[in-house]
Length: 396
Image 1 (spheres, rainbow, N blue to C red):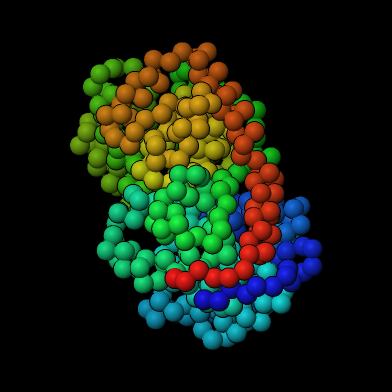
Image 2 (image 1 turned 60 degrees about the vertical axis):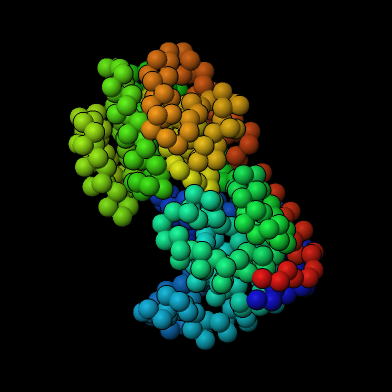
């Protein structure tokens, strides 16, 4: 891997190619983060485009989505393509862009595709989106992750011209993992577009507890939430019902239905699949509070959206937002254990309507002041420029 050391290819404006898909309303937080960056970077003198791959494609082709150039590039099929995804014609095309593109911005972790792009002689930026958190590294496929980390991924990280983290905690974890060998880094959270700041809904004192997002049981801590809910139910008869809105992930819906039956809470839990558009807004309006019990996150969009519309939230430490939201007096913080979640649920159940509205107002104020995409992208633009001024390379 040999990032080039040059001045910006496009003069005073930089050109950054983000590798990924454009899904501004999707359920995947990585896709939504990419959409936010490519939408709001141009006012900060950053020209952007998207690069995505399609297996079996013969030649690259260019389309436009919402005014953003999107290149679709050939990728290999089959098992061989999973490990070595880019054929020669794609590698040659990427290298031909070196005089036109200043940075490639890679997203997510443990992806052979990231490694393939990073080897194409253009400086690159990496956003892990929480993927190197200790809980993730010690979770599923731990041995494979450890082998990949020491043989390939560590070099990818330490040779990145810039690593973009969502929180100071995520930065500290990665500094520890790499033994302080990052070339440069920037902490900038996910953001909310100005159009997404709606009139505050407040907490409906007669409403439900709302989870919104992928039904990914372990990653989102939904097993912990159900177990905590059952514990709380054993102590009070007035606990609000629980509504989960979002698409199934790896059979999570069936797992939770079975768990609800085993815990005896099936009559208090319901599910809806749609998590976008009017359905999402309707779900927000009827909620007493938002609940997000993740074991580990980068920075969850669903929480930012809920806070932005004025919903107080139950947040575990793993959401990366607990401390900030507790300081802003807009969240019921807890640890990622059933017992701690149960205690927080009981507090929510006993909180007055007036207090819920006050916390909701605090939530909307926090998001407006610290999580707007324009300001976040201005910080990213400065970090891009500073990173391109660095020279030298850290050994992997």
